[in-house]
Amino acid sequence: MTQNRQLYTHGKLLITAEYAVLDGAMGLALPTQLGQHFSFSTQQKEGIHWVAKDLNQKVWFEARFDIEHLTAETRNETADRLTQIFKVIRHLKPVALRSGLYIESTLEFDRKWGLGTSSTLISALASYFELDPYTLLEKTFGGSGYDIACAVASGPISYRRSETGVSVEHIDLNWPFRDELYLVYLNQKMDSREAIKHYKQQPIESTFIDEISKLTKAVILAQTLKDFERLMQQHEDLIGAQLGLDPIGKTLFDGISGTFSSLGGWGGDFALFTRKENIPSLKEKGYHTILKLSELCKL
Image (cartoon, rainbow, N blue to C red):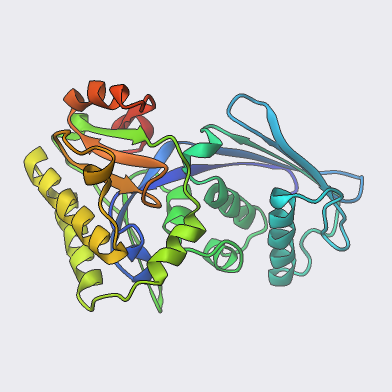
């Protein structure tokens, strides 16, 4: 492995197949313009020293880890999670993490936004230690892996996983209506593990995965805003029925025109909405973090 290395990985948004991508549905995913920088440097001093900075260059986490046992000198949730990841890395590659290492990570997006703090981390560590990122993800955070694909993607992708592996295809989104697509932050971050747990507790109809995949393909090919809104509403209704939850268009944004679609654990993180004319109504409701989809994502 390279001893001193700079790496950069992109954040992610899943436009379709939220939850369903876990069970093999095809999803449309977008890497974000913002991501996370990583710097790996060997050091003579034994141990691993990790410094994590936020988008304002402020240190939000710092810890030192014993090189033999890969345990942190100070215990907290982030240090415990890194300890777990380090131990998996050594299990997968016994020669790894045997000498002093300084790692610095710097986010370009707000940690609360849910754009992939964990997936950018796993992608970078897998790259540095020359491991399969999907294997490292499976043995640490778990999940579908679409976010790992986004971390190194240069543009929109379709993503699907099966028992034989993952399928990632780079696609062209020829959406004439892209300037009418926006993102709104819902002012709270959802726990993705809890959201997935809720999804897994629901029985899945035999046609659910195929229907979501068909909608994904249709969304990719949509040529009018009206068609896009119709398809995304069908998608929301299907996911909502599967979860036993009302879509946010009916709960948070009832009475506002256009279509609203959850992007992540329902009720938190970002939502996709259509039509610029809706922005004043959203601000009146207290939602002030509003971005063009093309501003945040690589389209």
